[in-house]
Length: 114
Length: 113
Image (tube, rainbow over all chains, first blue to last red; front, side, top):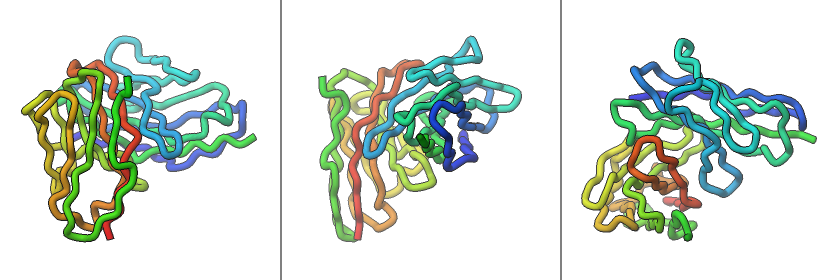
């Protein structure tokens, strides 16, 4: 089974500053990687996903993530955050052994301050 | 097009009671799944289904039953609720191919006393 680690449970940042949310996963032959966002009292919404090809993936709302196979990481970045980015962010992975099973990290709460 | 719907939104149960959490989708998705979300633990997969009549266990299946008689519906049954099942439950669906996006419902908040 896969495991996903999000080391930062909370990340405070000022508006218009850059942010990086970290995600590491346990190694596997092939993986599919996802970042989701959850606004208060709502379900999860997909931000971006890596399936294959270019290691730099661009998503919605100006977010991007880079797949690094050697470091088994998939960190999420945004060059300039807005107040509206305040939410909880989840990294998830499925792998080639069973792509129907998804494993989520514990989440990172991004708090954007004015 | 309502997407993924879940009922009820909130439920309080006593230990030992049974209940069914409902999930429906109108996108003709073959894949449906149930997760529970607990503080500090993210989402954990309970059960999933890749089509009518086909279900399989996820990471934390104990205490939960599922069945899939139609493409649209994927109910989650708690036969004898326990306080450890207090959680927020999310249903999700997607097309079957691995690259397809999962769509989540709004969640059901369950409190077991």
